[in-house]
Image (cartoon, rainbow, N blue to C red; front, side, top):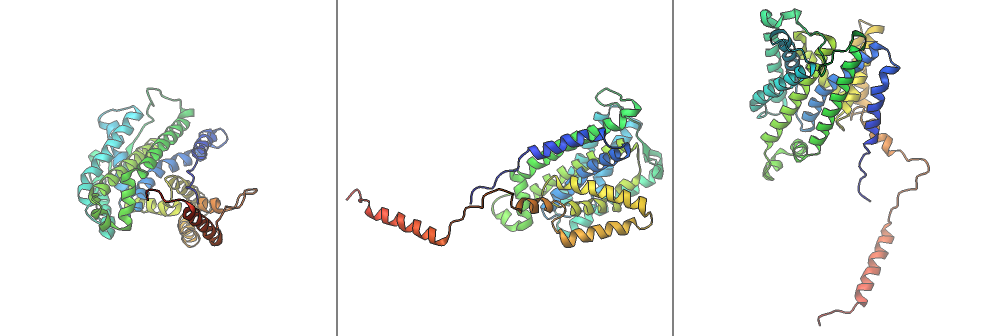
Length: 349
């Protein structure tokens, strides 16, 4: 068998172009749903990166809310109006918070890792809820439409500008996550999931690998929170609630962990299923989501992204059958080589 062919970059680039052109034919509401889906896909991507290392977190909404509130407080107290600057501050808040908490969290595994993240997330939820004078409590904070790179789009094109910003930024961060997964640290993270003790024996630092991955996951979630705040125009403490973390885990299972593009697929499907299920049946939409998850678990254990692997296994029309060497052919070839070697004169004697 020959080397495994690398996936062509033309397919994701073509999909990105199609998403950029989608607002020309789609309604404003669907464009908004796509904006939310692409933004949340970044937070789900952080969960997927940790799952590749065998780490499940139930508190990833902590960094999601940290990024959103960093942007909201920068607008309210620092009077920052530039959208790109708000995203930079959100990233700084997420990376800083995850770097601090990661010093402790990276030492735990299994259910302790999951519940410790949940505990920190609920602590932040309580702080955002109780400090009304600073955070606005249950009323939250407003995020007015900011200028982007010094340009303030008109009201009619604001949604389109935020969509393009979210799409381009998400594509860049997804590519960066892909490069990270293909790096030595990314491969070490997957090896930790298989056998942590052997990784230590090889001389790699398990704690450092998990810590770096944890900080990257926190940074992705913080950017997602800021993008959601800018798109919706309002943030509340519910961004840090445990149900939001559960949603990220739900979407990670729905999309799968086979690729960095899987969170995008899962997030888009989730947002459309949830919104249209709520529209058709506002009192049983949670049951619809549960049924969808059960179907995925039973028929696609690898998530929606496993459909791409099934498609690659299908024989292409007109393609020649793969060449296979039978045992008889292999034995004959080996015998011919042995006979040729026997006829060759031995030198040096």
